Length: 455
Image (cartoon, rainbow, N blue to C red; front, side, top):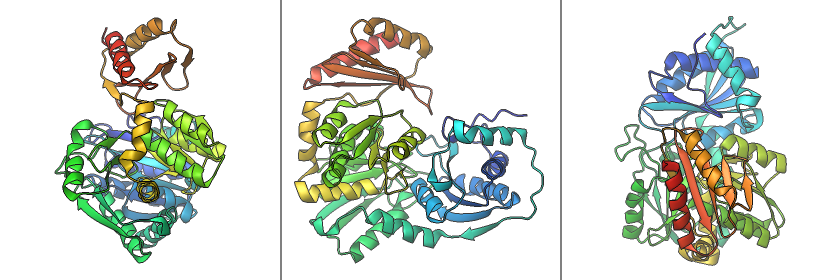
């Protein structure tokens, strides 16, 4: 039995030819069908050069287990999420490595009803079966059913249903697909919005899918990747800008000056938007940067519920709490009326409506930045992260009003707070610092924790 290192906490990711190849993808396809007793499975893929071959191998594995494969072709992860429920399939797989390096690929998976699939509810079983690699012949062979056009049309209708077109004012929006999978899906949404009479003009950047990623892997969370979008926003005179990662389940915002909007402020903004229409609703948030969201939800009469970082945990909490919206500062945004899953297309539609109703994005965010300044996520690659984290705990425990161990460590120091956690997908420790009305406290907090981490 071989140990498949590509299986992670809630998805599959690995280096091509080392952790993941076409033979392993085939075994995963068979194991997925067997573990879930699946007869119909949705399958999509991103634009990476290796994704088409890996997807074909997954499809062969599913077919050899007797499955009908509902093929989306090139698509975003969220299209797979939606299609799994839309077609009442037994599960869904999107072959994607999201923002990982060029030599990586992977898969994101859900079970029936687009419910999350993690180690505790199916993923471990899939891993065990794939490692065992013993598959009796199925009673009959499966087949591939091309549902791409039908699936996208239904998806577009659902996404556009989040928008009150009548509330829109004429806006120019810069969109940067990063040569990922977002371009064709965006165009389908834009076409439908035009039919509905939406007065929106779009300036497209790096729009065509290209698995060689000539501008680099699309990951706008990295500061070095932001200037291209910021410059284009200013050059186009856009009201705001949007950029996506490779499988477009995350979207990132820039105001009309080209300034990047940190994810925690977007979470607060969208929480407010939903609570305006659905007072007293429940909002889910992750534990990294929390004060801005918690205050806004409280002011609007809603209920803020914190849960662990990661899409499987957020989705489960969304379902458990019947939350209308959930957000992570890493730019994943989840919606009850989008099968409790994350979407990178719905947020920009909501922001377009907010800007139309309330004014410039920069103005909507300015007060929140002043009230709760934050550091942004700072990553540390450490030789001994356990020892480094122990040093931080020893120093700050006596000072802390509260220590939150839901996901890593969160220390509430009264006027400032920080979160420290190990990544689920990369060998790094991540630090976030926030404060109340004092950016100098943020800077001080970063330096104190940094000194302890680096020893």
